[in-house]
Length: 383
Image 1 (tube, rainbow, N blue to C red):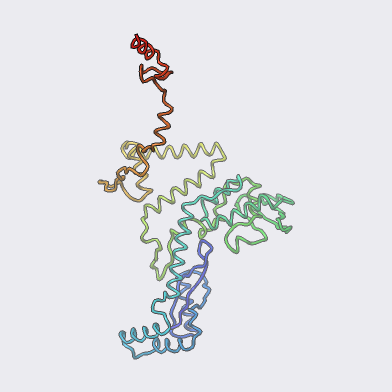
Image 2: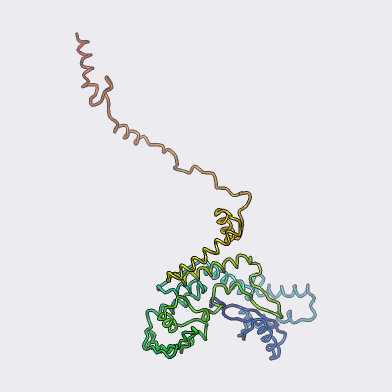
């Protein structure tokens, strides 16, 4: 059997294995069939590759492995026995096979990148609303690429010439490498074309178009230029469709949580768009308030405490348990707490600092030798 994995780039711009096939023959017909089926599943042209462990160059290993894999006479139990003999001979009994290990590593990396993208809000380097909108829309890895282009538009590019021809603007822009590109922007349709073709190649806007958008005071990136595969919501969509059957990569995800996440994302995007315009911000605030009043009225006047609890439960994805079994630990008396035992030297020093009194009259500022009362007693006794 010939192992043929299909490799591409995911929405974090990282390499990913889309799938793999096993062929019984290495001929044109078999590969054409595999590629056609893969195109049906993915909906795009694949790039094939062939991979294997380093032992694939060992002729002895290949010969013995092929004698087991290609034998038509081995029963399942005998096959397992012969397979284990080969694995033992070449020290592969505890071996984690390359494909499984690679797939597990890819899944871990993707999950970590998704988690970082959801939990982190990156630092902004310009005051442009477009940059903040990009931070809300794009996943973290892609945002840093877009941020670099926005910064270059602000600090490395300059406009050489602008011409308006019946609603179509022609910009001649010189970038930091002293290259001049022309950007043609249709104001009515909010569409642009430009020479560097970055958007056509990777689906991300270049610094030249950001110069135009900055000059036009756009608050957000036009949605026509926001490619879905680079957005935060991309990981929540379907993976592929085979013969009309949709295979969903988030089948175990609570649909309510997915919708809630998208609602928060939409609200944040709207706020980033209108925050620089006080009139639009007031309109948006009134719309939110009207909907809030409508929802509270439909719920029959629930208390604010109940509303807050429901919101927290919806975000956390779990409800408050009826019985709390995990309690704070009892307070322990640690070493060094409480009253410290003083040493004899410390006690003596403290006593020496106290005001001394006479042992005869118990009054301060003199001792018994100089005590007036004692002298009087001595005189009486002498008489």
